[in-house]
Every structure is written in C-alpha cells, then in structure tokens.
Image 1: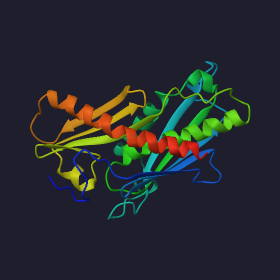
Image 2: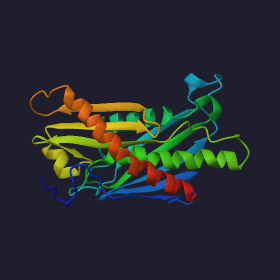
Image 3: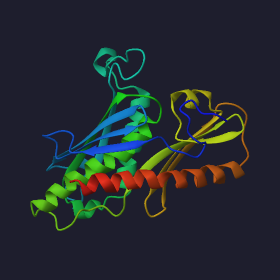
Image 4: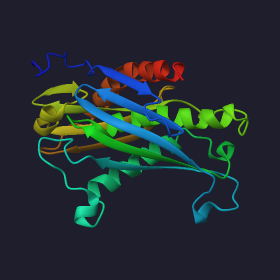
Amino acid sequence: MTRSDGRRWDQPRPIVITPGYQRFAEGSALIESGLTKVLCAASLDERVPPFLRGKGQGWVTAEYNMLPRSTNTRTPRDRDTGRISGRSQEIQRLIGRALRAVTDLEALGERTVQIDCDVIQADGGTRTAAITGAYVALYQATKVLVDNRILRRVPLASAVAAVSVGLVGQELLLDLCYREDFDAQVDFNVVMTDRGGLVELQGATEADPFPRHRVEEILALAARGMEPLFAAQRMAIGQL
C-alpha cells in the first residue's frame, strides 16, 4: 500500500521536539510529528487539589485544546460554545493518566504540575503527539525543582510516549495521518514507557469486528514505532 506521504507501513512520521519553547513556563516543548504540531507547557503550583491535601503527594493534570485554525476549517473556542467538548475532556484525561503513570507523586511533594497542550496544526495523532511532547515539558518542570534544590531528583520513573496504529483495508499502518485515520476500519492509540510497559490501549472498530490476534500485531507494531519517539525525547531533554 502506497501512503500519501511515501512512508512505509511501519514507518512513523518525522518527529522533532524543541524543548524550552516558551520562555516563562517552567517546562515547555513544541512537538512536530509530520504536519501535526502541538505546544506543551508545564506550570508548577505549590498546591494540590482538595482531595489530596495533607496526604503528602502531588498531582499531575492536563488540559488539551485545538486552536481555531489548527484544521482546514475553524474550530470554535470553548468560550464560544460555553463548555469543554467531550473529545477535549477525554484526551486531556488520557494525557494526565499517562503522565501520572510515570510520576512518583510522593517524591513530587504537595504540588501540582499543570500541563497545557495546545494543537497548533492538526494532521492526525494530536493526542499521541501531546503525550509525547508533554513528557518533555513535565521533565523540564520537575528538573527546575531539582536545580533549585527543592527536590533531590527528577520524580519520573521512566519516559512515556504514544503512537497510533490503524487497519486500513487489510494492512496495518503505523502513526496515522488524518486521511489514514479517516479511512481506518480499526484505530488504536497505544501509550507505553521506554521500559516496555503498557500504560494505556485505546481502540475501536468503525466496521466489522476484527480478530483478537490482530491486537497482538498492533501492540508489536506500536512498540517498534516507540523508539524514535523516545530517542527524540532523550535528545530534547539533553538540550535542557
């Protein structure tokens, strides 16, 4: 199968992560995955949500938003509709879960790291790019605490990243662009750590049910596609 951008079926899009993209955020990163671009910013707050007060642990949470002209038609701002879209809520919860899965919340102490993920340009894979870029912003923000001798170490157990896999026709494709995602009969988002642990698996069919053995194929393909993401994260962190 010939892909629109000439990639092989098992080849991810080119990825570039620019750390420290915003001057005033404690952590930030611009991630570019093909034509998809997401700006991730981490802010430190010396408070925790009410349900965590006095429990000696911190919190990591996220917000996700599509800028109005990140797509080929204008996306209304939440203020225009008066509510956060269900899609945005689902994605920001996913980002928060992925980051908390690799964060030592007790070592973080009673403080919150708020991650803002704003999609500047969307060509599929915005949630997976947001997770991959948000990890770099989170690392940078917690490193600030170490540099200021507030924490003894960066409270992250491993890196975390995400990639999509879809079934288009009868062929599995890694890291779907928008056109491929639109055409896919089966679409999965896979979140993993650089130690090989599976954090989250989201998947559904838009057509007929598919055989269980294909899930193993999807996970194997996603795992192969993770290494370029972790390499880009390591390079970005090395530039801090």
